[in-house]
Image: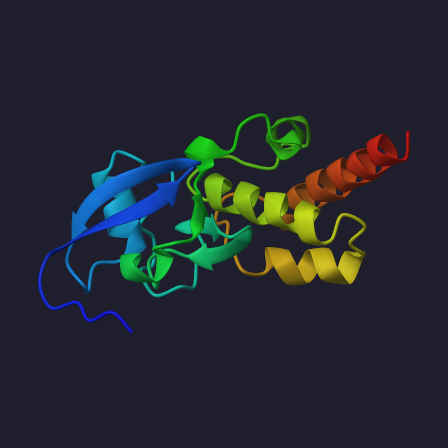
Length: 160
């Protein structure tokens, strides 16, 4: 186990790019990402309830407000800024699945991860994955509809 006492220079793989950062051992991944200008992950509740800080680590959603930056060393971090051409982005627009947009990056990353791990997810699995994030503006039905529509499209594309 590596011992960290004071400021440390570490390398984080963020959106496919190795980034050198100097961090404190107690610094959260959210704070480090935002200090690097990656502001898509939002500070919301800062206790892991809302999901506005969601990023993917090794393709799984995590709450970056609860994750120490040191825990991400040697892992693949994907933020909304690195999520290019996600089919869910257009689906959210088409299904009116967002309003203010504050929670949208977190939801999009959860949906992207869901499509990787459970591309043929049933309603119960979709509901389980979406419960990790909170939206205060819109109806969850629109978000659920967008996810179902896009997962169906992804499966049909893979079959063709």
